[in-house]
Length: 164
Ligand code: ADP
Image 1: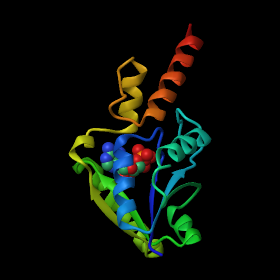
Image 2 (image 1 turned 180 degrees about the horizontal axis):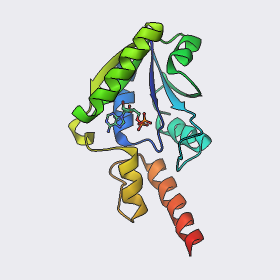
Image 3 (image 1 turned 135 degrees about the vertical axis):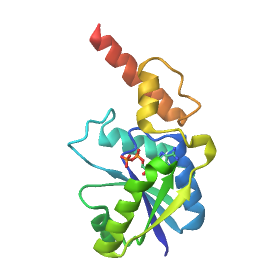
């Protein structure tokens, strides 16, 4: 069985993530969406919330499942029998860092990284930009799945209440 992983923080998942995940699902028998648990990174959504949203988002894809991991991606890959990492490339700005990671992961464990050119519709889209726009009341519903738009609105209105 050919298995690939789409790793990330997914804080929160966007239509750009879903585009890459769904395209990877056409190429591999199974795609694991792996949410990185990184306690030192301040996230808007908890790991459980991010996983719940992703599970809802990928529910229509029978060969996609959601998992989480801590530590090295290559160790997660080894434990799950995964030999390929699929990453979306938005622009040249993504390239330097992604190339370093890909070369390190190959060197550490022989895990391959395949880069997928993002759909131009999503090349400006990032989780951090979505959070920033939503925080200031901008409408992000065209850029994220419905479940994410709803959770963002609920979370940010709760935070505004708390600030009052
Ligand atoms: P990280 O914490 O590594 O920045 P993200 O959750 O923001 O993780 O993104 C995970 C991965 O999803 C990225 O490394 C990239 O491969 C892909 N990705 C994110 N946004 C987009 C997008 N708009 N188009 C294509 N791929 C994307």
